[in-house]
Image (cartoon, rainbow, N blue to C red; front, side, top):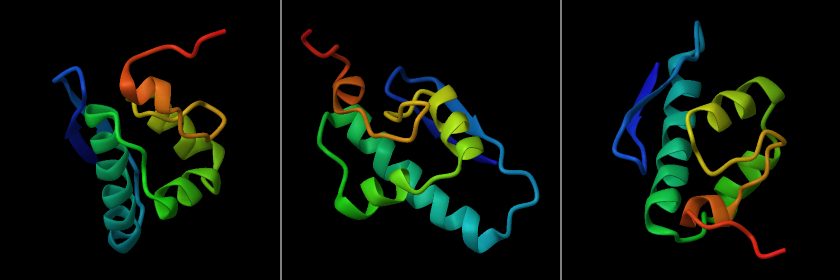
Length: 88
């Protein structure tokens, strides 16, 4: 389980089950980068953006549920990170 404090100051958890610790550490670093982007409004780095694009559906859904700046389709949403909605 990875825990972090989100933009809304609430503690969030991502349960990873029996995932190897090396993979959990890798996911933790990316979640920290996404959380930083969500809090500060800064864009994520290219490596994190590429990682998000390659995520499987299950992890993408878990990240979207905890309020990270990821859409359910695996795309980083800068407007969600900044707390604004895109202009139509």
